[in-house]
Image: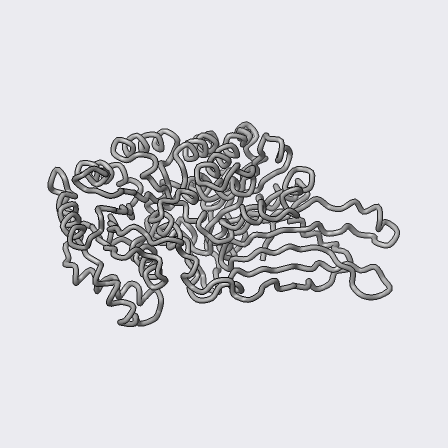
Length: 531
């Protein structure tokens, strides 16, 4: 945002906390009706994603009353281990992640429904044993044949696994299986438009579109979900949510972590494929979309598609005026010295893969014509932060021209997605006294102030919505294709240009990215919001 050093009579900012009595007890608004009994099958059951996110999310849902009764969790992977060994492995993982010992009264009822089946890659149909086990257990446990398939595997394995699951009949909803079948796929959905189309062709050979749930877990954050309610259920905001009143929008997704264990993947992806094709453009769509005719999944997703189609084609001939790429070098994060990207394990010492990107994009439609949207994402940055900041236009200063010598800071609305989910609105007030002195005041609403007990995380929310059959927070294939269509020319320009090394700006780990990103915004009269 515009952080001028010449704020009107600089004074400390006042914060007004907006809260109240808790609205809901934990779990009381999770579901309206009982969920269908089902089996949850995790492909890649020994992987990092399963250990850190999926099983922990399922356990939290179970404790909150957010899983059906009965249910079954079946882990499937190549590791040769027994169900008992797998249960011990998962228990140790959860305890290490939470730092707490599991209470037997919570753990025993959950773990008794957790099973493990070894995948045999040497056969023509590696998932036959999983299918046979599931059919027997589903019948004995009265699960009605319903099954949720979670692909917790690297994207490079999607097509092969989908083909093998299809051959084993997992997609079927016929008399042999009974019940429904749904499959969850993690981003990224391809690495460019052509690979995204190929992935879809292979999935659709066995699964219908209504059976496919493409996860973007950012969409399950409470602040993102509430964005539509905030805009369309409050008469004071929607009338000014347009080019007449909004100066520009900043969307930031900053991480303090480096590539960690994902170096092999990240060397093939980079920040544009990893964050922009999905997270950043999805947040932009939720911010910029028109009100749907009715609050239903396909109507909401239709409006998001319209946003993607209205994105102005990126001016690749003037790319330096609209895009800044960077890569982190050695620096300090949280008081600890961390290596540069090229020194990370698994990274080419001459790598030109960007770990930071800032893009200025426009939409050619009635509501947003001429309003710049600045998208920024990077690794090893100063603070872990994801937020949407809307800066409104400055008020005319004519009224105060005889009493104020400096400009009036604009109103700013911030929707913080993580780490602490909140909404803030900053406006100006007069300080008491004879002189005309303005002070910025912030109204601050924290989600934690109106919720008791367990707050559902993003993975709990997407799993619950998939069990409910609700596609609202999942990405539709035409949305995937539109995002890749917009991004592909940028990727081609960045990856094939002769001066690729000169276009990659280095920044010290623990900072807010390369100076060139600040310069590009400053040339437009803006400055990044930073903590």
